[in-house]
Structure formats: C-alpha cells, structure tokens
Image 1: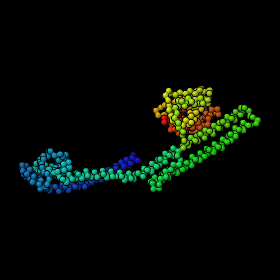
Image 2 (image 1 turned 45 degrees about the vertical axis):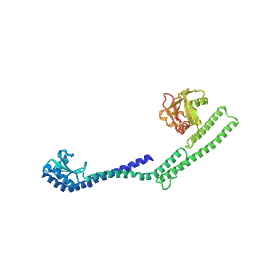
Image 3 (image 1 turned 90 degrees about the vertical axis):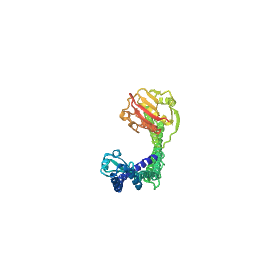
Image 4 (image 1 turned 30 degrees about the vertical axis):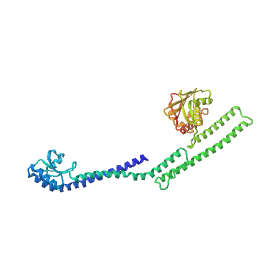
Length: 424
C-alpha cells in the first residue's frame, strides 16, 4: 500500500503545485504589480517634494534635512551615489528619468535627486518587508495544505487497497489449487464487481476441475475392468492361440494398460491442487539406488551415471522425481543407438538432471511441441518405438509442480533433455 499511496499522493501534489504556480503567476502579474504601482504613486508626491527641496540646498545641509524628514515619516532616509546602486541598466535609466524604483532585495524606494548624481534612498519600508514575510507565509501555508491532503488520500485509498489485497490473496489461493477460495467483497466496496467476476470464475473453474476429476475416475473404472477381463479371458482361451498371436495380444493389452496409467497420472498432475510429499534427498545417492531398476528397462543399452563428487541435496517428492527421470530414460532408451548418459549437476540456485542419448536427435523446431500431451514426432510413430505421447508432458508437469522446468537443450549428437529443479 505504501508504494501505491506515495505514487497517488505525489500525483495529486504535482497537480496541486501546478495549479498553485499558475495562480501565483497570475497574482504576481496582476495584483502584485498593481500594488507596487499604487505604492509608487503614494510615495511619488512626498519624494518629489523632498528631492526638489534637496536639489536647491547645498549637500552639506542634506543630512540635517534628511534627519528631520526621517523623524516625520518614521522611515530611514539617506543618499547614495548613482553609480553605487545595485540596479540593472534598465532600472538605472528608469531612475534617471525621475521615476521611483522599488528595490525588493532591501525593501527600499529610490529616486534620483535632480541636478546631481545622488540618489535618495527611503527604507527599509516595513510594508515591503511585511509583503516579503507574507510571501513566505503563503508558501508555508501551501506546503501545509499539500501535506494535509495526505490524510484524505489515505482514508480514500485504504478501503481500495484492502479490496485489492483480498483479490490478490484470493487469486494466490486459486493459483495454489484452493478452488474453494472466494473474495466475497461487500457490495459497498468499489471493487465489488471485480470480486464478483473473480468469484464467478472460481466457481466455474472449480466445477470444471471437479467434472474433469469425475470423468477421469470414471474412465479409470470403466476401462480397467474390461481390460482385466480381456487379460483373464486370454489366459483361459480354448483352444489357446498361437504363441506369436498370444504375445501380440499381450503386448497390445500391456500398451493399453500403460496408456490408461499414463492418462491417469497426467490427469492427477494436471490438477493445481495436487499435493506434494516432499522429503530430503541427496540426488547422487538417489540416482545410484534407482540405476539398476532403470537399467532393467533395456539391458542391451547401458546407462552411464555422471555426477559431481560433492553432494547434491534437494527437497521434493521422491516418487514424482523418480517417475519423471524414468520417463526421460525410457524415451532415451527407446531412441538410443548404443548408450544413454544420466548427468547430475549444480548451477547457481538450481539442480540439473540431464538425460543424453546417441540417437538421431530432435529438430530444434520441435523443442516445445514435444512436451505437449499426445504429441509425437512423425519418426517416432512406429509401433516398435512410439510411446503414448504423454511421457514428456508428465515430466514437464512434475517439474513445474516443484517450481522447475523441463526442456530440450542443444546437443552435438542425439537428444539431450534437461530437468531443472530449484534448490530448496
């Protein structure tokens, strides 16, 4: 709120000061100029008489006459040389013409004594000094008025800010997967319509996610039951089919079972409210522990583990991380020619898990599309090598649930997939 208040207050103050400057300029150009002319006319008669009288007296008699006149006017009077006056050339010419000049710097009136190079100086004049003090008083009052604007601005801004905070907190809760979050702003709030729109969106989102969850659960139930029946009937089929036909049927049933499992896994990961079960891991020890299981996926293509000597501590969901790396290794083993490499590394505030194969590689233009669900490249659609099209989508979803990212990085040969996870 502080930043919003400061910005809004500065904007109001800037507009206020511009208005004050314009008003002050108009006042100075009209009222103040008129006041100075009035003062000049008031003093013109008295000073003309005095300077004319001094012009007809010798300069030795001036001090006594000035002293007498000073007592009568209650103003200091003295003379000075014309050349010593702190005036510009234009004011000096004006003074030589017999006119009165007001010097604001010392609050004095000045008039040239006829027939001499001496100037009669009257002042400081208390009225002029008062005008200067009043000028500073005006500035002080304007500043006080500007500061006093802070209170009404704060009172006006506070309920708006509280409404914005409520909307922000509601949006954050929705982003974390709490689909029951609602702003429920009162009707008197200036942001009530925005809050109602956000609440309506949250209700529709909750209904959509719940419907998707119910659909996924229904598909799991409806598909797995006939799949188990098919497997059971295949085992009891009489007469038994040829061995090649039986193996082909078992492969198709296994592929269908894998597809259902992948679909259910992706559906669970696609829910923003999916909870994580974090544990503390050391990635090097974790990889060595699972390496035999990963190698069993394809014993004919060795998996080489490459990692730093120092520990790589990480906190996250071990089950999901294992699933993500297994999907990457399955994909690499499927397309590798001879071997696959699993690299573990640390980079600033992230830990990197990279899987490299020595296959034909992937064109750069496909780098983003391959992480979309059910997207497979044309060359991978062969029944012998093509997967379900959900493996890499699951990997990216797991990475993003942990605040990381999955990507395809440039490689001299084959494909190199990177799983970037934040240290925490």
